[in-house]
Length: 57
Image (cartoon, rainbow, N blue to C red; front, side, top):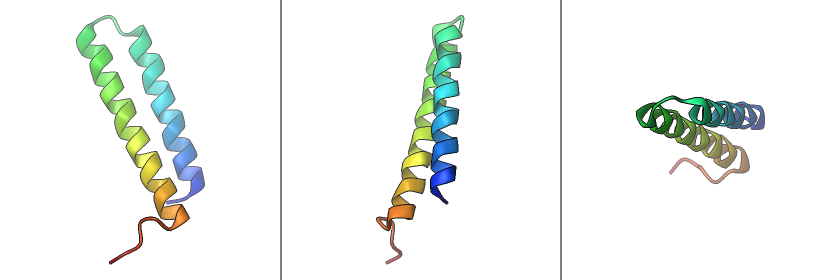
């Protein structure tokens, strides 16, 4: 994964947060926010691999 991937993942997380703000139910809001969190984890993983923190053992 690359920095471009990380950027795209963070954009997806932001979109999920926007959808959460528009959601009509608490369940939908929570689902969108969980999804945003997943995108952030992917972004962090992409950034970690790019910077060498995720070296194979």
